[in-house]
Length: 257
Image (cartoon, rainbow, N blue to C red; front, side, top):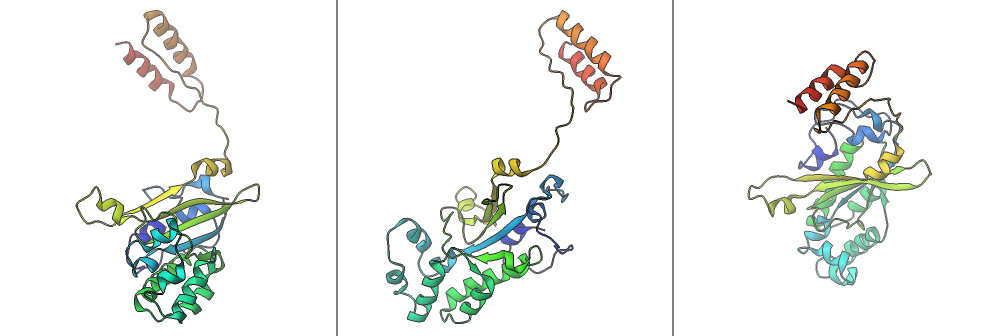
């Protein structure tokens, strides 16, 4: 079970079978659909993960998060329609920070009086309790200012940051709930989740060795070329290689049948 599984649920009921002891990137989402670990991700360390919930704004007014992202509006003015001064002060403080450690967030949530807003913050804490099984608590942050993806994320979302070999901190992945977007092309009401990974940067961070491999590409041209390719395949069949040469020979024969 990974982050995608949790984001697609209302709450985390079970702890994962294997508790997380380190910070390997592959453990967070480097699993195939069959549940096998993707070993190539080992050694890529997660610097921190950032949790967000745009519904903290949207429970007050539809698409308020989108307005804050794209329109030049005062956050105090818009929140003044719905919240008391104390709540406005807390929300404004959180909104102006890139990221907030979870201990501080918990202490601030306890001071919020608006029930709808508080409920959305509590959802973040539920997710936080689950993610702590995978990462040390001091690697998990909250961001209210992260309104990226307001066009497709429905509510909860996250970003995963790694430190590259050059020492830079890079946003390598993000994901979350996309119920609203799914509903536009699927009439059935289903939970939707997605994840995007920066594969270009990730490929530069993965350490791997290129294996010696022999490949034969054959085009159906004429009998002479066919005979030459078949002769080469027969010669190579005695050598150890990545491909089964008998299998390749069969393919060559089929191409000319």
